[in-house]
Amino acid sequence: MRKLSGIFLVGLCLGAVGAVVVTARHSSAAVPQPIAAAEFVTPTSATPTPTPTSTPAPAAKTEPSASSATSAPAAKGQPANVNAAALDNIVGDGEVSAVVFDRERGAVVTSVRADRAYTSASLVKLLIALSALEQGGPVADVQRMLSRSDDDLASRFWTAYGGPSIVTHWTTKLGLTGTRPPEEPGRWGDTRITASDIVRIYRYLLDHKSIAILNALHDATERGADGFRQYFGIPDAAAGQQWAVKQGWSCCRPTRMLHTTGVVGHYIVVVLTEHPAKVDYATGSRRVTEIVSTLLGG
Image (cartoon, rainbow, N blue to C red; front, side, top):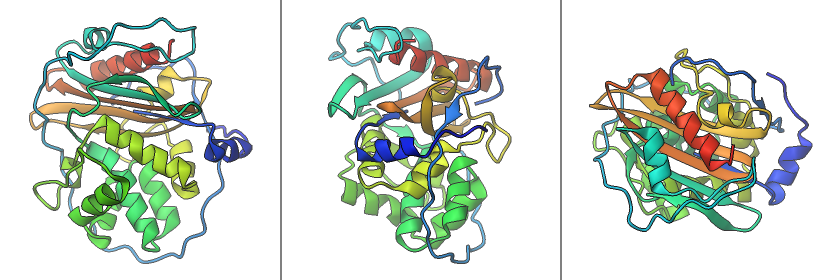
């Protein structure tokens, strides 16, 4: 993957940034360009034996929010204030929540069902990474866990750095209101999250210049450790723009989760989706990409 100058990250961490809110193969005409960044130097520690992971449990379906306003037009390439109906039309028989936050203005551009709960899939790896680095964990392995969405490393770190207490610790520290640890302690992917809480996590990473984590998100590989194509959503929709992402995908207890989150320019973008199991990953991925394109004014 080509990398852009690390100078961008400096600007990103100083305040001109934004964030974004994943599945099987589909083609992309242009390959998006991640942002290069310097790494933290963190003491290396041994990683314990992994605990098996599993697919998150489904979230309950909800009706569209009555507070959703009508879509506001935007210039091409600029985020638009998109309403719930527009996103529901794209997701079809699935569920969608989305938040676009303009970090330059400190304002929300779009908010659709921001407090609806979903199972996190791999998005909880952001909190696992924060705990691992806070406790002096091995930075290179933490970055690999994030950029390749490596479940084995996530399981090792979950066991080594606190398990469910990782979630409760960061929920308290960051003031997360809808995030909950999994009911079964070993199933980290069953952590409950909301779009508004994921935005808070990204704001913390950017405000506190969490370079090791941001670097890994900038260097997200096209395929995850399990072979899954993780460039759906933000990477495909923001092709040619600077981005940093953490994606999530899981199936099927009994539904399919596809999440895309991250930073595009100075915007934080979070899209969480839940689909019936009959909707395959390729179809779900295309839907998520179309949702992000709509949010970004593409």
